[in-house]
Length: 400
Image (spheres, rainbow, N blue to C red):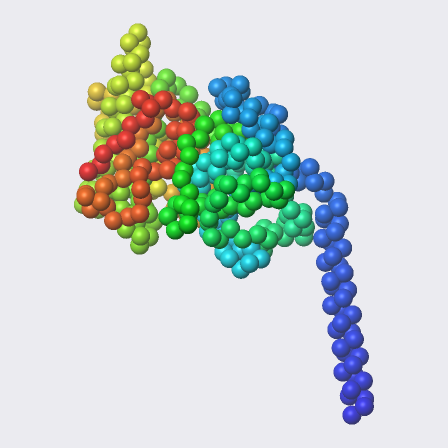
């Protein structure tokens, strides 16, 4: 009995020793990873220097909002507004907060940023934007972001944060009133909160002050634009058919009917609207002959994209002679999180570089629409804002 107890005791000591050694090894790896990688190098992997104006639209270089932004970002970040949103993440309070698509979350983020700038409050963003670089002085950075194991940040694996924004409440009166950070969700509540948040109109240059394409995304943007290089005019078409049609999601978001010719009719209508916009833009250039036009077609439906390519060939010789260009993106990838976000940014940037843009109107409730969308696609609206398009170069196309 005594021998058995001693063997168990020895086994327990060996087990404890092994666990301690394993813990020490993991600690050494984490510490060496943290100490061996310069913090600035880590930041540069996903940020850009705000003093670097490379790629900044010409109209933004001397923008007043950019000057104001640069000034405010120089204030103490101990009182910064942290705008937070992740596709899937859980914080130490046990809340998991999904994030909206890039159209919704960007318009909210830049609305919140507009409010913060007016109050002289610096801004930090804690939200991955795959494909984009973030202005370096706008990065929310904490100790758990620096802890890495074999080159992987522990915070990325655990999706953990030490603050709670699950209420989605926003109280602008509290921002910057004390020397502590304020945390807000990137998509605050507009209805359920005690003080519903009201969206602000933001300066288009504010987007470019915050975000730039990374080298890989810029390469893909350039490659797609080169395919349209011969066109003197380029018109973007964004057909949002709705989640129920595009992805078979049961949420009643049907903006273009599939089957029985419904989706084909929607595509033809969008092309007709693009023709109308092209004719208007040509008539505005009275001294110029009709120029080569390319339509860039973006959509959340693989079927609609294939239809557009086929239909444009059938329409050759018509009143408006146009080529069509699309990306190779399968819209189903938009549901795949990080990789889908990157591809969505690619199409948003391409649409923003068009001379004009056609988007479809969301059907009204009177016309039988049962979804929750409150207006036209926020993705298409984001593209027009990024490109600072004149209102008369944007057309909202009625499908029904």
